Length: 240
Ligand code: ADP
Ligand code: MG
Image 1 (cartoon, helix red, strand yellow):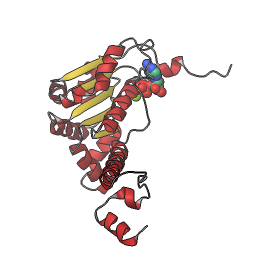
Image 2 (spheres, protein in one colour):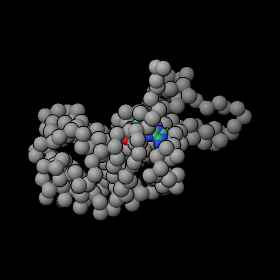
Image 3 (cartoon, protein in one colour):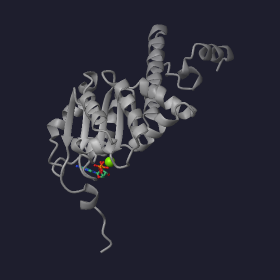
Image 4 (cartoon, helix red, strand yellow):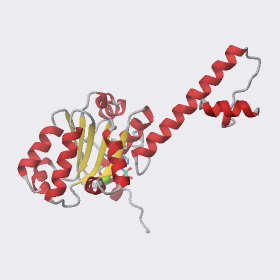
């Protein structure tokens, strides 16, 4: 390809020209061809933005709503899943708290929401509670944590997985409370936990803080209590 064309394409960042994805000329007029070119560029930019958003979201794996078996998990209906999948609740700044014993599908639902949201154009961040606490504690001394915090502050949805499995200190509880206050009324939050609200005071070691936290989180919030046995256990493979 013409060197000057490549150089100008780079200067104006028309990636389809220098990535070798130029649309076919066919029998198009000059104007029609330009339109094809801009369409191809728009699509390439959208794909790059989606890939970057998915990378930043740090979802540990791909989960889908359609694979969620509502015959097994009877506490959630297909209608409720469809409402969650529409994501309008994120625009309305609702939070979602998924409570239930291990293996009941809390992380599956949170991941399906996060995956759909990131692909739709929402900024998402997923973290296990212990990793989030680590980020909060090291944001002043670690570039990586500072960068994660910058992304969190731009997020539409923050997913905090497995709150309640690991004990947390008073300092950590305060840092977590600070984050939830920062996100309050700006960002939707999903929390998954094996502990019901009455266990939160003990988890945070402070009933006043737990109440203040719940107050912020539950002002606009859907709580789903998942029940029953573990899907993993029920579907575990046997040797004989
Ligand atoms: P939890 O976070 O509640 O401990 P997970 O969401 O990690 O449970 O579920 C454990 C495993 O079982 C995952 O692989 C998940 O995809 C699967 N699973 C759980 N519940 C369901 C369900 N109702 N339908 C299909 N797969 C499920
Ligand atoms: Mg889980």
